[in-house]
Image 1 (spheres, helix red, strand yellow):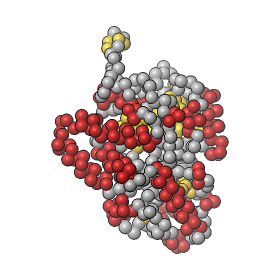
Image 2 (image 1 turned 180 degrees about the horizontal axis):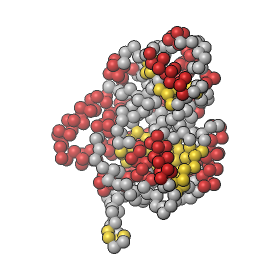
Image 3 (image 1 turned 120 degrees about the vertical axis):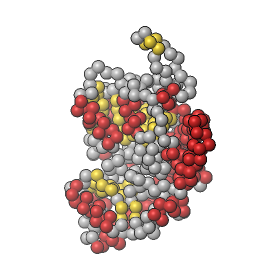
Image 4 (image 1 turned 45 degrees about the horizontal axis):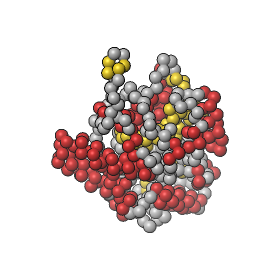
Length: 392
């Protein structure tokens, strides 16, 4: 089945281009344009009452849809924010420590974590223990060993690593290996959500899960979320007025003053005023998937099929750099929705990406790694690598 009919707007705006960067910026389905107009109409209709309307209609629907996709069994534990960095910092603000506290993570985390953690380490706020992701076949055991050895206050790792596409398929084992109940565990699921089938049932009580709509949920920037562990009663220092929505903690004496109340569910990690346009787009996309029987399994099957077609076509050209020998993750069962080629150095990688772009083949790169992402709007006919014959 061709899914291109759902993406006519973005495809028409990018005619004669091959877009292989949907792991970075996925084309939006046409339904998102109507969703943005719907947001305007609802804002005009409800004006001052729109916040109540959003939290009584839009937010609960999205909570249930996301919870069902992730099988958390706890839709009330989903909380939204404009970006995952805001949610991450709110989680970290729960850690009460008089000195530097320990954080165990990896060398392959996205900037929303890596930059913040590096700055906090520079300031002396945290002690960052970084575990290399390669070699991949021993990553999980090495990571769990580091957790046991350092007994950190925070564990942070990705479900799918952004710089390689490697899928950590034993997320639950890693989470459950954390024996200290006071240790916060955060899983960055941005390259997993709506791409790889994900079941959080076994860890919904223990781990935070961060993701959003910019990539595989296909709704653009501005709609990120966290699954907050069930039963969580943490009180973020970095907090906003949305965290008072719903039933609240009972005020209690703290230093002679009443303490700040928090929602009893995932909303305790909410922030403040945000633009809900992106949530309208996300709702429209998830509704479209449901109406057309497009599940995460369907998406994953289509994308992995496109990767195989791409690699088969690539092999015909015997390109010295773009070949399966330079794939970072060769095992398709361990790979997310993009192919990563590791080249000689950053300069060679950048030049190749620019050359591809001059032939209207759009990719992206990080250092010496060139990435090709695939989505529902790709077809076998869409993939045309004839330009490589001019580049060898």
